[in-house]
Image 1 (cartoon, helix red, strand yellow):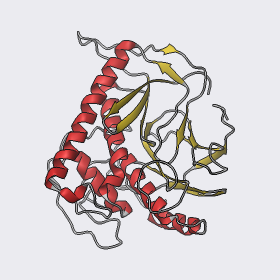
Image 2 (image 1 turned 90 degrees about the vertical axis):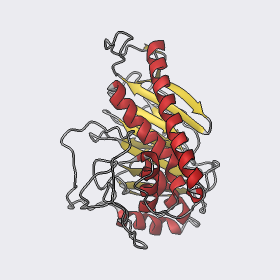
Image 3 (image 1 turned 60 degrees about the vertical axis):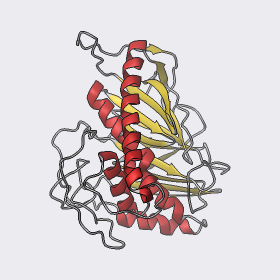
Image 4 (image 1 turned 60 degrees about the horizontal axis):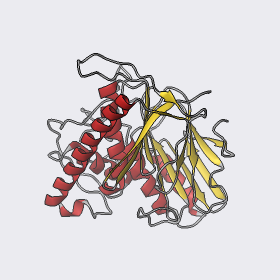
Length: 345
């Protein structure tokens, strides 16, 4: 790739610290007429993001957004994030253990969509719902903004966790604290006709809680909330370097099988917006150790409905990376490339 790629802005709303980058899009004027994006170029580098330990990303290859564009995106994003944070807070007011639980909680069909998404991601990965909060906010925000502005590409970064809707390959550099491998490896994401979620947990970097000691535990999944929850779960398993192979084998056993048909697959490839509350969902009992428990929804293969996401595999990991000191292990659908800090391969 050559040239710059994204218009961008940063947005901080209380503890939510966002980087939003977009390409293309239609921005209706006050009279309702669509205007295509024509941003001003300020960089001549390919897009590369830093990811690691929940730290904020440093993203290159961006444009200075047109003031009208930026205002519209910032206004919409602020509205969505404030609403999502309010839904979480209001739910936690009547469910005190929601914010503090370190284990999965029962699905609540009456909860707001953001809470349902966090509950189901936590069920899938075997962690508490707050382990998925950053990814869930990024996912719902990304889906809404893409629907609102018809972006060609959109990247949402929330505290080091990503929701990505891309049409061309994208490099994501891996930050792993004091590891000798930090900043020397990048993940090359390929477009898949649907969004990706990419999240990283660390026991040595950043403020997020981890019971492990990994410098970086990264997970790729079709949904950012699920990637966030699985990254936490993976990080918790990594207490010694000897744990890396077993931990990745566990995630591999949870991944969708290549020959298993996907249910509820949509014919079109546009990302969905799920900001509105779904009408209903029937709760089910989750068996211990069974990631397919919970309601018939996106993490229930063979389920009869797709409550929040478009396929039943969206909450399952598709690739993972572990870094501990000078050791690295990887599995699945992660394309790793050496990286010397430049913006191009």
